[in-house]
Length: 339
Ligand SMILES: O=c1[nH]ccc2cc(OC[C@@H]3CCNC3)c(Cl)cc12
Image (tube, rainbow, N blue to C red; front, side, top):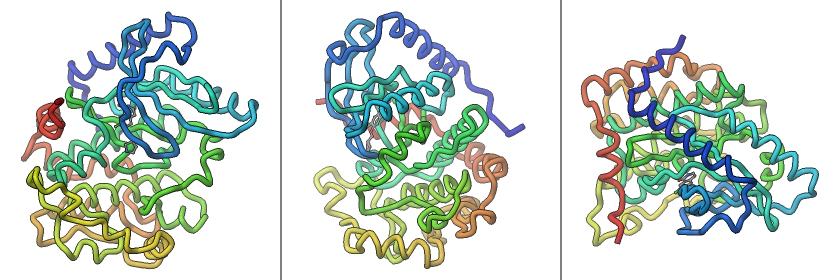
């Protein structure tokens, strides 16, 4: 059995609290869009936009992801049917699901609200994430991947910093995993972006499996540790992003996104043809962290360290033992004080 850490009592309590809130919510009849009061837009990406909403009848704050799709009723009903699998998800490392509904040309997915937001926004705000914090985050991601594989027999398909969410309670959860094949097909040609976390085998249209998620994990960790998207490898030569850039000089002023200069096709060709990127060995990262990322970033999927071994990698235990993190405190330190 994998070395799952026993959930601490507070974490278990929060999972139960969620299920209790969800029961209260489900006791209200089917969600009508008018039941939701829009509070603030949280972000855009993955084909949709995310809004913080209040479900008025149950007085629960939620995150609603809306995906505009021009599809036939049979296809959208198939998507809603497949999304219902998410009701079976109950893990401290997987975002909670309240339900989904179609309205006015959009699939709406109601999820648990995470007040710390997504890690892409955290990195934009503070520059880069300390190694010991990344070890905690990595454990949560790996445990979430184990849960998806063992309970839903699925891989994530879209591991990247913007699909990892954190909360001021110290929780760290995966979202936007590929639970609906029909939704995946409907979104197939909507890729927009200047960077890709996709594995070489997937970019080449070859068969891919959970090892492809491990490539994406390695690339995401490299980016969050250095504050720089690591492809092309030259990006890393310019040194790390400053940690906690002075508020007067927003990060953009520091590191204009070098990948913008490289067109997306050239970038994808680089991923497939070049040696995988590595953590710099003169920037203060531990050897076991460098080794962990190397174990994920093998171009050959079969050479990547399997999930069961990664979750037991010395880096996770060493970091947790030598530099333990209070995740609740750390997340709070990254949050923008409300005006
Ligand atoms: O609180 C959330 N719950 C579920 C999903 C979610 C997604 C979020 O952001 C997703 C976008 C995608 C690209 N960057 C951020 C945020 Cl910022 C909060 C939540």
